[in-house]
Image (cartoon, rainbow, N blue to C red; front, side, top):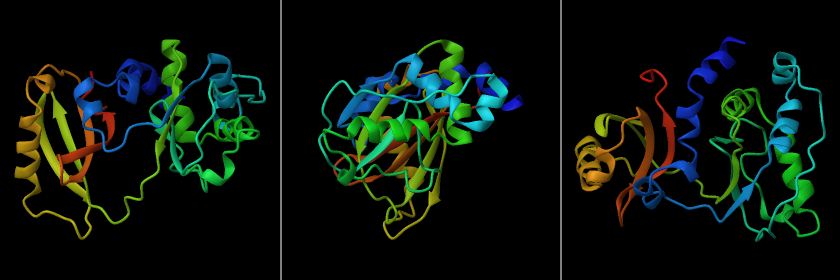
Amino acid sequence: MKQLEKIAKCSTAIIATEYGNLPDVFQRHYFLHPSATLAVSSEILLAGLSNNTSYRRLSGLPKRAVKFTADSIIEPQDYLPKLGVVSWKDCVGMAMLPKGLLHPESQNEVLSCWLTNLSDRMAQVLHAYVVDQVTPRLYLFPYHDFSARSEYRLAVSGGALLDARCYRQRQDFQAGYREAIKKWWQCLGDDVAQLEQPLLIDVVLDTSRGFAIIDVNPNLHLHQ
């Protein structure tokens, strides 16, 4: 219950980091853009949450089946699915949505399966949408294996870069990454100077753009 209360206090800040809600400057510098963006109703969201045992116990939601219908045919390819701000990274076998499952006659059943299986982490964060009475979108990003790439986390607040650190070091690691990231951030210009919310931004090296964004999250430790 305490975790849900914490999420409720920061609900608007959490939802603001959903891909579709991000400032244009962040979307332009994303490593990959969604191949499909699907609408999710409040009924589907609550049905999905009701299948998480912990959330159902805390919220009192009755358990309901998820019967999702996509508003378009999904092009078969390997995807990284995200529901609003959360991925299925901690759900065994579900971090990637493989193209072999995405046939027109079965795509709704497959997507309903994904929406039914929400981890405790996912359910807790998705509570933000329940609090703010808005619905997340289901994003299907082209899948990319980042296991061989170094990943860097930027802490920003008030549009200023506060810190940068490498949290996953691989062969493409740059020893002078802090200075390189600082220059890249400055090149984003006045668009980022207008940002007030404390954020944690994960990036990877991109030879054509310097760095590219792979995830944005609110920095809840600094959020008031």
